[in-house]
Each structure stands twice: as structure tokens, then as C-alpha cells.
Length: 276
Ligand SMILES: [Zn+2]
Ligand SMILES: [Zn+2]
Image (cartoon, rainbow, N blue to C red; front, side, top):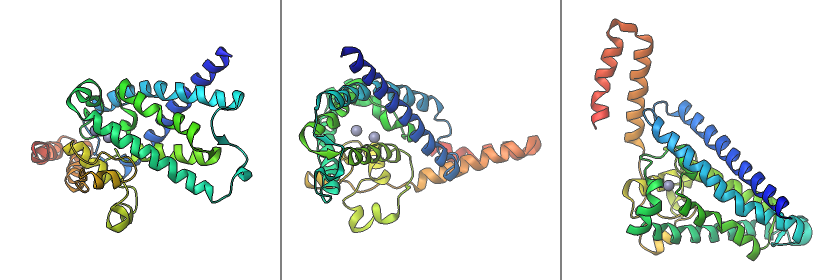
């Protein structure tokens, strides 16, 4: 029994780690195509983000693996496999319940982690990414990773969910975790501006959290921030993107301009950008 449980924990750790590398890697690659130069000079930071994230994969993987084992072998949890066990309308409702519950848990633990002691002890690791990249999605100190790791494994004991709907929740969690730190908006404008955007969290909202700290604590939705007076609106990527463009242009001129002055000129022209 213990061996099977351990194997399940190991398998889940591998799944979480590989999922992180694939999803963050894909969005980091998309960033190179869409905004070349955005992560230039951040290599040491990216390496740190990857190491912390892989350590977090173990902390996420172990409780998830143990619960998955119990679901398969002991009938633990409220996860159901036959979609007709409950009415079909319950599928989207269960997804929404999970996202709302996870969001509430995240908002309050995240807000607590911004108090001086827990911040110094744990959350500073996540905020060492300035600005964060697509690799920062799971860059947490183990204490913080633990508060995140227990949320879904506890919820599956409380709220019934179809295994496919649970997969959808986990996919949403992964994609939002990565894209919120990516440094640009991948979603259409109505999702982050206008009436609907006023209630949803995407990169523009979380960007402001990483700039100003004491605000915008939510994960998926803005209602807790709005109710508690901690919502400071959305950030703006224009400056960062202009700087990235200047860096990419300078690098391109340096690469194909040879030593005929192009590279030097490019470097010189990019100087104010670096200083700003
Ligand atoms: Zn963050
Ligand atoms: Zn924070």
C-alpha cells in the first residue's frame, strides 16, 4: 500500500513538473515571437524561477498523488467518473464552484503572505521576479507552495466534480498561472477591459500586483479585491514593450550590421532605454 502511494506521489510530481516545463516553455517561446527582447537580460532570474518551480512541483505532486491513489483504491473523494452520475448542468456549476473556492483561498492566503513576517520568510521568493516571466508561474518558496498545494486536494473531498471537469479546472489553473506572469496579454480585450474585464484577472491585473505589491491579490476573479478595497485597476505594458522592441532592434543591428558602426550605433541608441 505504501509503495503504491509513494509511486502515485512520484508519478504526480513528474506530471506536474513536466506540465510546467511544457506550458511555461510554450508561452516563453510565444513571447520570443510576439515580443522579442522582453526577457533579454533575465536569464539568471529565469533559471531561479525554474528551480523554485520544480521544487514546487514536488510539493504540489505529493498530496495530489496521495489523494489520486485514495480515489482509485479506497473510494476517497467526491470525484466521479460517470458523467451521468449527476445532471449535466452540474458540470459547469462544479467548475465555477472550484474556481470561486480556489480564488477565495488564494486571495486570503496571498494577502496574509504580504504581512511583513510571511513576506520576508516566503513570499519574497515570488516577488524576486522583477518583472516576472512565463517561467514564474510556480516560483514559490516551499511554505507558499504548500498553501497552494492543499487547496484542490481538499476541495475534492468537499465538492463533487466529474474527473473531466477537474481536468478543466487544473488546465485553467495552469494556463492562468503562466499567462498572468508572461508580461503581455494573450486574451482578447473584453476579458481584461470593459464590463467583463472588471471582474476577471489576466496579465494586466497581476502585472500591477508585481509592480505595486499591496493590491490586486486575486487569482481568477476581481470581486474580493473590489469588495475589500484592494483593487487598483490594471497595469500597462506599453513601456515594457517599447523597451523590449528597442533591445531587439539593437540586437538585430548588432548581429547583421557587422563592425561597420551598426552595432555600436545600435548599442548607443539603446542606452536611454536601459537607463529609463
Ligand atoms: Zn505573481
Ligand atoms: Zn504577492
